[in-house]
Image 1 (cartoon, one colour):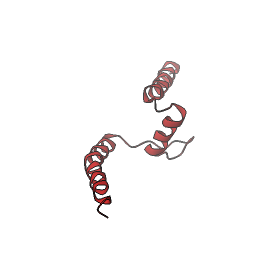
Image 2 (cartoon, rainbow, N blue to C red):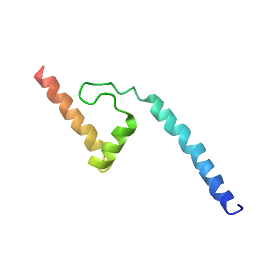
Image 3 (spheres, rainbow, N blue to C red):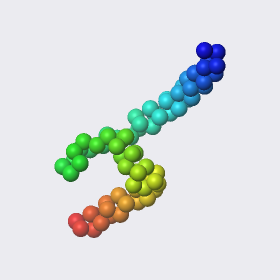
Image 4 (tube, rainbow, N blue to C red):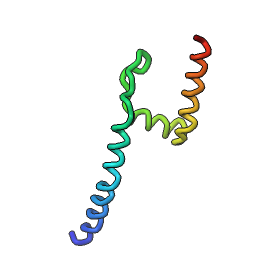
Length: 76
């Protein structure tokens, strides 16, 4: 048990530092709109998709959507 104490303490300290920042960041994001194609999508599902399909490259993923938005505006 004495060997586990430093591990438990470091884990709790890490959570105390990381969790509030993560929650604050999530709170600042607007809700993801539901749509007819995908239905309701969670932020966790999007993060998994970016990790898998884009190897975590959020700039490439965002760039794709910016190009699609620009193309849509040109069609109007």
